[in-house]
Image 1 (cartoon, helix red, strand yellow):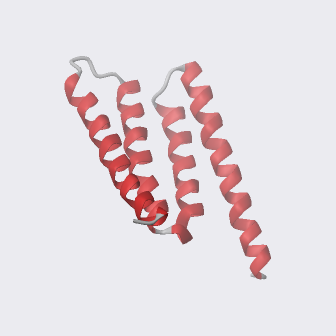
Image 2: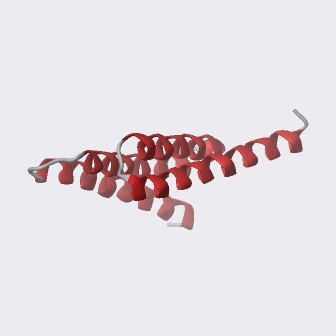
Image 3: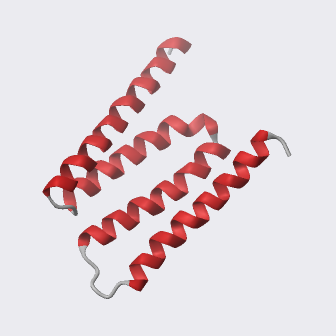
Amino acid sequence: MNFRQNQKLFSIFFAIIFISWGLFTLYSTENITTEDIALNFIMMVVGITYPLVIFKTHLSKIFLLVEGIIFFCVGITYLTFYSKILFCSIGASLIFFSTIKIYRSKIKHGV
């Protein structure tokens, strides 16, 4: 097995662990708060996007942008004040860096 195959296998295990962890914590707790729902949703999104980036490398900038939008929206709508600041800043930085990467690749290719 070479490095690329090991990385693909690791990404599948990573996705299974994060998605099952997100679902398990939703079903195992008795008092579900909006923070629990938001953090579990983000764990599942991260678990889904990592294998997608590994298998579809040409779409990695778009996945990064979508993940930033999800972090920002979840931070604004569901979390408390201090968590809101953290998640909105992470989401805004992901959106910022992904748009810079997208526009740099467009300028480099002359579009």
